[in-house]
Structures are given as C-alpha cells and as structure tokens.
Amino acid sequence: MDEIEGLSLPPRFRKVLDTAVQEARKRRHPFLGSEHVLLGLLSEQQSIAGRVLVDTGVADGVRDRLLAVMELREELLRRREREQAPMRLMRVGELVDPEVKAELDAAILDNTEWLRGVVQEYGWPGRSLVGEDGADAAWLLAQHSDHDPAFQRECLDLLQVAAERDDASRSNLAYLTDRVLLKERGKQVYGTQFNGTEPHPIEDPEKVDELRAGAGLVPLAEYLKLFQR
Figure: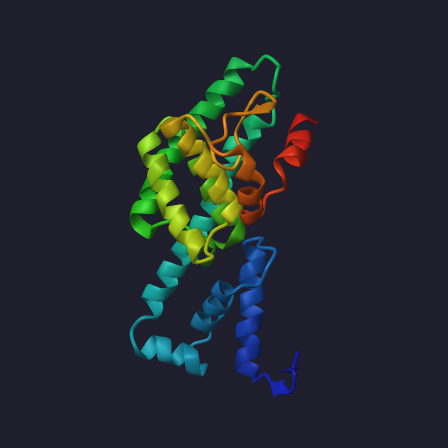
C-alpha cells in the first residue's frame, strides 16, 4: 500500500505499519490496533514520531507500559478460559463431577484476587485499555466473584462509571447489577439471574422489558425461551 485516499505513505511509515502487523500476528490478535502501531513507531526511531519519543526520554517507559497493558488483555482472556473450561462440562439438572467443581472454585478464587490487583493498579479495565474482549473477560471474572460481595460491589460501581463513558458494555453492567442486587436486596432489576429455569424475583416486572431494552437485552419472555432451551 503506497497511499490512503490520495495520501502517500513514506517508506518509514510503511515500515511502521509492517511492524505493527507483525506485532498483531505474533500475538494472534484478530485486529490491528493503535497499540500495534505505537509499537511500530517505537521500533522505527528514525521516523519523526519515533524520534520525538526517543528525544523526550519516554520511549522505554512507553514501551514497557504498552507491553504491560497488552499482556493484561491476554491474561484476562487466559483467566476467563480457565473458568469457562470447567463450566462447559457442567449442565443444569445434572450431577457435577466434584473434581470439575473444585477446579472451577479454585479458578474463581484465584481470578478474584488477581482482578483485585488489576483494579488497584489500573482502575476498571475497560474497552479503551484492554479491548472489547478483554473488557468482557474482566466483567465475567467480577460476575463470578460471588464469594466476595464487597469486591463485587466495588467492581459494579467501577463498571457503571465505565459504561457511562461508553468504555464498558451496558448489557454486562445489567448482569452484574442483578448479581449484586440479589445479594443486597433479594431482588433484581433486569431479570438476568435465574433459579433453575425461572428468573429470581424482579423489583418492577412491568418495567423490566423497558430497562432490558436500554441495556441492549432482548425482552424477558424471549430470553426465558432461549434460557429454557
């Protein structure tokens, strides 16, 4: 590619883009993001932007911080899979293998403590920090941390702020809201949490579909059919 919509691409910037693509492929990322381009700029120090980063003395710090953030996303995905793998072996209404249950419980306990450290260092890991899939993984780890209600509430408060600035999914916020409120009030708002094949008590059943729509969720009756299937 020599130009984009009439703009020429100088050889050094083509090299930056080539390096960015290599970085994305090396990490098996299915996208090319600003983080990869920044790594490309840091590797091409004779480009104008690369020279500025070096001359201002921030190149090494930027690279270290960027790699840490990219590794954070990858670790979130690994930890999500650590929980999902045993959960895929469990079925509603069927006996659970004690070893599978123990594996899941250990993963949740470990992931909760790890996520606590992430929140302390970075705040809530939203889309802008760890991408869409990383943010979903962070939400799921918080969703499963039922053994620590205080931390789960802390995650909910942070997730709400992130969702308000479009840095987190509103549907994820709805699920975590219901999870927390069931413990605190005994009722949920969005009807996302079930007891077997029936939803737990809902605070305002008449408004639940309106609230679900605002969170990007299908009507409760439709969700109930999907859940029961």
